Length: 381
View 1 (cartoon, one colour):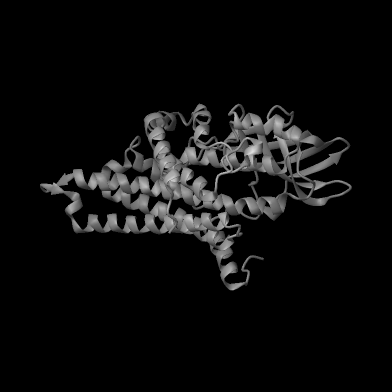
View 2 (cartoon, rainbow, N blue to C red):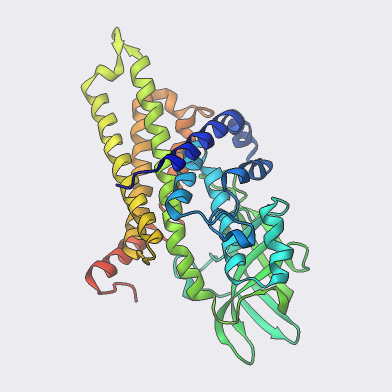
């Protein structure tokens, strides 16, 4: 188990206090309105929440994966929608830092770090989920620009985004259908977003994106043609640890609420925590939280050591996301009727943790990835 040092523990303590004082009191209002307080991202930047993983030369903090994961655990503990928006925003920040031109960094990266613009990532399509290689959207080179056509679905923050890092199959003199990444700006003619209502993470502005002959200048291509697949798959590996860390935070929140409730709620003249079956729920929840945390921090530590850690990242995401929902389910059982109440955290955590088993590769995909790494045999054709 990774042990946090004094500096990390102090940072986590300060972050947790800030979130509890400034964000927790307004979560219910935003859940009811299905809105997100984007202004808090600028205030959270002081802790490393914007650009935490990019070099200081680009305006970041160059944080280790373990420290970054710790921050996402705290975000997940506070609010699933916060952790999700941070993941999406920093995903773009990291890609721009690693692959962007100086012009792209000036136009897009620095405004993101200053919390002046919003972003989304366009991967998933109506016919394409976990299989990135199956992307159907296309970009045709026409002189000094590309013409992009296609659709993206289940795009987090898509309804709010000023820019979209979208991946399309590229056709030009140098590319016969290889995948490339493009920075599409919201005011480009032919680009539109439609809000998608869903059960989980209701404040994250999920959208369906449409690209109808969108003219994107060549200078808005991110990286060389045909390099998006390897970069996307590499990014998904670390994104899985991010989700695992957020899931650990959400599970810990559900556990803490349940422990407090079991100590104070009385039935038959004594706290329900004295009942054997309630204690079993609490113990089972604790085991899952501790195991998920150990797996997530181990994966982060191996990334810090320079390892690809595909097996560890997939197992951490697989177990932590499933464990978080199981913990939330048991928490609802401990709370009884109160757990169903809209406005009480358990109902929200229950919904949000159910969604964590799907993005960045479903639980089934994580199982196949881990199986391939363990056996050296691929079940994915």
